[in-house]
Length: 158
Image (tube, rainbow, N blue to C red; front, side, top):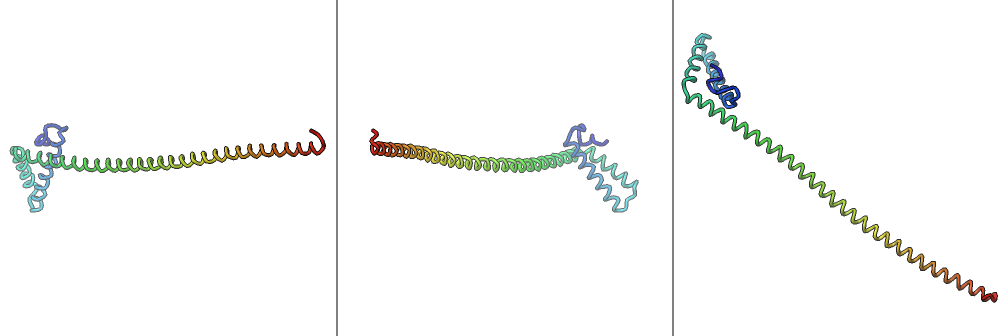
């Protein structure tokens, strides 16, 4: 009979799992009989009877499928939990990287502001030095003119 006792077709995941439960129980039954000293013929006969009971008892077939659904459901829940954890870890990593980027932006803006303020102060100092140089140059020219005028007067040159 094989797979048809628990599933409609080989694509039926629940049926495949249900069949594995059937095979597990059948194997455990045979092992129990072997452990009690039954002969191979007795075990074969008992396993065939077990099979016939399962095939003709819808409640038992339904129990295999219910167990399969439960197992499949648990597997999906476990996978979902693992995926959620991995996803959350990735989100946490991204959020940490975004926080690092934001901190770097803040630091860059702070340094840019310091550089801008420094450039303003430097430019003001240059402008002040230019003004001082112009004033000094103007004073030097006036001083030189006075000297020349005084010298010229001293020589009688006007």
